[in-house]
View 1 (cartoon, helix red, strand yellow):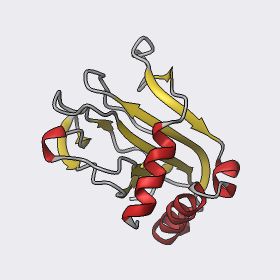
View 2 (tube, rainbow, N blue to C red):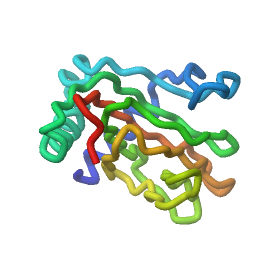
View 3 (cartoon, rainbow, N blue to C red):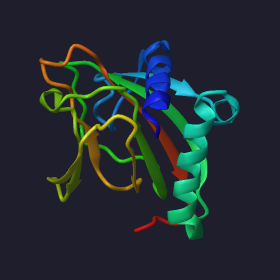
Length: 168
């Protein structure tokens, strides 16, 4: 995405009202995360969000089209220093498109998304501004909290697509 567009999406998403509404997995209901739910239809029509919505939908359809992806949920996450995220899965069967919404991110701020196999971390994705990462909904993952050096919250926008079968 163009840096100016990334900056505008960051400004908009940073000013959304976030509430501690969601948790990662069964048994972690007492560890709530800052979320803002976005209606998929409203996002598709929003003057600024519609380009992000279109790109996420286009990429998921291009890569996972045979599994008939249907967008079921979109939400923004705000993760400040000190918050904890636990490993979880998303829609199964499904595909997740994870957009990193911060306009600026320094290496020392950390906050990588961590992906697991059999309980062991196997991959990370750096929260580069404007990056859109796709992964199967059954892949265990968690958001990494920003380091103490980061004075801003790590913001992401998550698109969750239901599919007919779990893609590879």
